[in-house]
Amino acid sequence: MRVLRLFVLSCTFIAPGLAGCGADATQARQSPHGATVPAVTAAPPPLQAPITSASLTRISGTAADDIWVVGAAGTVLHYDGKGWSLIPSGTTENLLGVWATNPQDAWVVGDTEVVLHWDGTTWSPVVAPSTGVLIGVWGSSASDVWAVGIDEGSAFYRRWDGATWTYDWLDFAPSFWSVWGSAPDDVWAAGSAGPDSGQLIRYDGTKLNRVAFSGPQLRSIAGTSSEDVWVVAQASPMQHWNGSAWEVPSGPPITGTLFDVWAGSPSDAWACGTNGQMLHWDGSSWTLAALDTTLSLHGIWGNKTDDIWAVGSSGMVLHYDGRSWIPVFTPTN
Image (cartoon, rainbow, N blue to C red; front, side):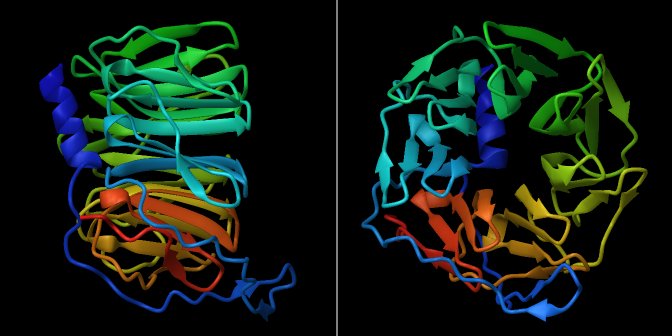
């Protein structure tokens, strides 16, 4: 399975950025009554000297002062509201997914099916290494966590019930790349059904069900409710689930791959990918945001409208303050 793992990483995260993009990133917001109001700007995070050159793959947090980032070769970063620091992970495997429920409970997954748990003090392995690759992780609570990935050419998942991780696989789905849910009985897994087609599976609290979907391989899924779900893919526009059908809202052409998507509300979502692409959804359409980088962006997560983070190649960490994206670290290579 080493060949498979290298394929996953090269196609997904551990790759240099390509050509850049550009547009005005300043966004106005809509009040609950529909009037346009100025964007609210959060205090910017402190600028720091670079602390890693590793490719960073995913980001997740529980609050403005509790944010985790993972990446290549066991890299783990933490933000405490004052600055970013490297945290020992105890592994050199590539880490591909992270999810946290509180400052004393977080999970990381990655190559060789590594599963690490944070107890507020240290990261510890909880699953023996195996042949698969875990790429995404999400939970509805501390006792209900899903991790998804690829093993021997088939999609598989692990599930934590608060005491043990169980394992199961789907022989009809080649891969899972991302998992997200709106509730314990509404969990979605996104991935591929073949070289040129995507696949979605939805858990209803009792069983896994296929979701009708027409489009390319999917790389990430996120939303705000069972009627507001986004998926992103390779060289394809974002698609939106409105509770009854998939729709393709207006937006600019997409080049390369969109790796991740995050939604804060039905009128505020972000997606990022290769070529330094960053796109914003305002409730009506997607627009390109202006970024001063050509590096690939692999992960995005937000605490609120004016406190959003993105991570990518060469140790890149960006912060959005409600008006513009600002590098926190200058790439080291």
